[in-house]
Image (cartoon, rainbow, N blue to C red):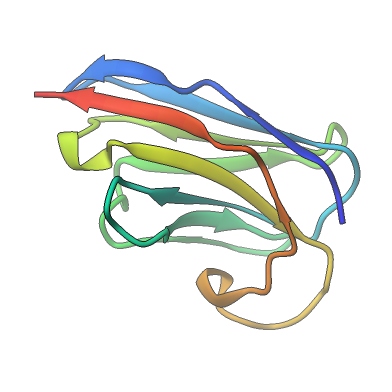
Amino acid sequence: QVQLVESGGGSVQAGGSLRLSCAASGRAYVMGWFRQAPGKDREFVAAVSWITNSYAESVKGRFTISRNNVEHTMYMQMNNLKPEDTAVYYCAAGGKVIEVDLSSYPYNSWGQGTQVTVSS
């Protein structure tokens, strides 16, 4: 397991942009973002492994995930934000090298979460 620290959340108006960052204490095969809105289950947003990336349909074309493997850091640029993107965003990571859909990957490290609020 690795320790994860998120940053970059905040409040913006619809159509605005935010960039989330996640710093890991060590190397991870997969790093991803999940979010949880009030009263809803946690849902997959996006993830990046050493070889591929994956996005939820609801954010494709608006969010871009990237990582710096030297610094063990992951980023997510969020553009054209919508009120329905409002949630606590959690960074997740896992070290097991397996072939599986990144939305279903067995993440075993989680950050504390960062709030993203989008107003209409």
